[in-house]
Length: 238
Image 1: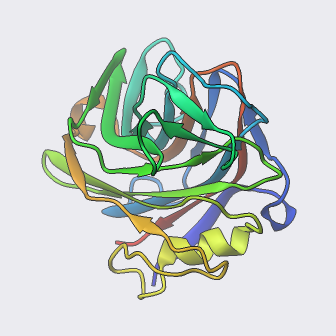
Image 2: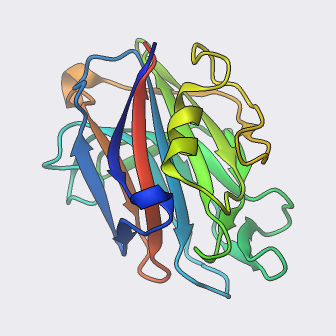
């Protein structure tokens, strides 16, 4: 069975524990680099915002090499995970959420790597998810699954649009999954909000050259709004 560990959490998942403003957080994992399939789960929302966010906002969620030069450093040692990829996050007033212009589903997330100053993305999106624009209205949940390969790693996501009554237990349960955890699977969780499963994409990763992936890394490159984080967990599936 997978071991689920919490990096940061709030009491009951309802309080902000990290508020990212053109910045990020990186934490070593207790398992180090001893994994083949890793899941990283985050409960998040932007701070209250009622207008579009322009300038290609980037939210990164994934694993990095150490905590000295994660995403946000002048030169990143090694990162692999997912990144949001739209020029404009369009505010949807009735939904109190951000969506891509012309899309009814939400923001696109891509598989990516980041080494030095270079972002490399898979050209085909994994999935789309609406991001809450008000922490009191709801929270988004995204789980990034990273499966090692040589040289191509496979990246997928499981996400829920809104978790109004979100808590750490929901996130921790869903990291392992209702089907026993061997396969990332869409299902109806405790809050009765159907999850959306993405389509796995691949990116080339070189741990020998750029450093082993032994830390969780989240980075938000915008100053307004803040990215509010409620809980961060990870699970070694294999």
